[in-house]
Image 1 (cartoon, helix red, strand yellow):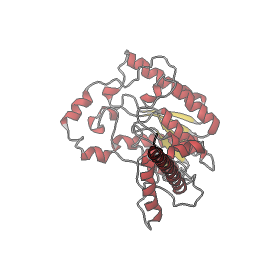
Image 2 (cartoon, rainbow, N blue to C red):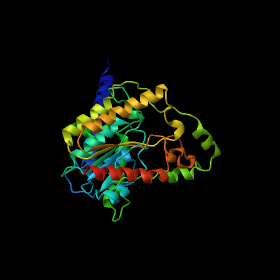
Image 3 (spheres, rainbow, N blue to C red):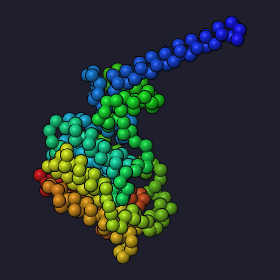
Image 4 (cartoon, helix red, strand yellow):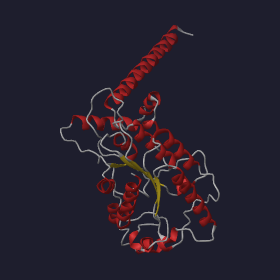
Length: 334
């Protein structure tokens, strides 16, 4: 090998080491910056930072909302409980409620958010409301998820949280966070987490679309197909509550469905639906200060097509009386 070739190889090795060292230093600096400015207001930064976060999705905004000491009660679930107003529950119960819902999530995500909320209370929570839809009926012990969720953000382990910060979308949010922290009057995400999807549906013309009504009238099996159990989500919920909130009032809510999505008596779907309902009814009966509010039944509101956008997403015409029933259940448990 010639001396020129050896010299060239040495230069490339030196460049590689320098580049690698610079990349490590840059990554470390960005990680330190993200940790200090706390892009999702998780409370882990040693600095005293401005409360709240800029407008963003509920999956990440829940880190800030869930630790807000102003709130004593919380709503958990997905879009099937999303339209229940925390403001209405606050007004009707005297307990300050926050909505920690996240669309397209199931029990695994809800349990993570429930754990986050409970371990950030200085005093015992005032009340918990959990939407129990078909995803809570799964026999899958892993409680598999359907959409990405930032589990790392709610980790108890600081090391796993730091590992989660090493991603491009966090870098983007860190820059937005810096703007939020340095602005005199920044736009803040709604603290109580309420997200009214009705306006979005109306903008898309759902209410006036004749095809929507035709689809709504078609039968849809929403039972989940779990005829006899097990129901690991119910067991996981009970275990978490026993550990962190044994005496906190709890309302389990079976959200409304349009009549064409309700189980037909005598079918396997009806058997599966009854089995799931019974699992949570047993939880409610065996746990102190717990109630089951069941709107997944054939009632006049669930027979009116104008009350629904699709089989499982209802309008405020239903959300308001549903919230009133939830509030009444909470008051009955106090």
